[in-house]
Amino acid sequence: MKVLILRGSPREGQNTDTLVEAFIKGMTTNSKIEIISIRLREKDVAPCKACGFCKSTKACTIKDDMQMIYSHIESSRMIVLATPLYVNHVSAYTKSMMDRCQIYWNSKYILKDPIIPLDSKKRIGVVLSTAGSTYPKQFEGLRSTCELFFKGVHATYEYELLITGTDKVSVINRKDILKEAEQAGRDMTKKLE
Image (cartoon, rainbow, N blue to C red; front, side, top):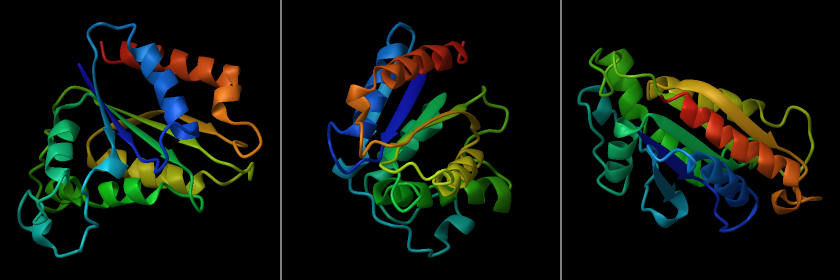
């Protein structure tokens, strides 16, 4: 069972990466899980140019690293979006990748010929995110965008771990959060069985 982790942080080894590593640690207790972890900052993913090509075909006209990411999205049972919160939203790396997934939305709702078959096994969507501030409504924009993304790629938004206040106390120093992320990794892999 393949799990795809799309890492949207521009910084290596910081709060979002630390949260992801704890989640992965929990998943590795299941020997049946194959984890594909992609650091979006290291990939060539051009922004969507709204050309409309995917409204008439089941493909994107831009040929870059999204072609590889598409193949992993299509073959994964779980997709984990890991992104820091920037301006109450996903990071730019994450947003560019999500926008390029318009091919799934169009194939499903415009062309009525989904790239990812609607009768495929249950697919799970997970969001891991960190925010420096503690503003109570800061994740609302991120949440609605992720929900729509998962709908397009035929996955159920199953779980989220949204961490606030990392400007004051980093994730690495919050053992309770790391433990929760690790347990979540274990719990989510059980849902794939």
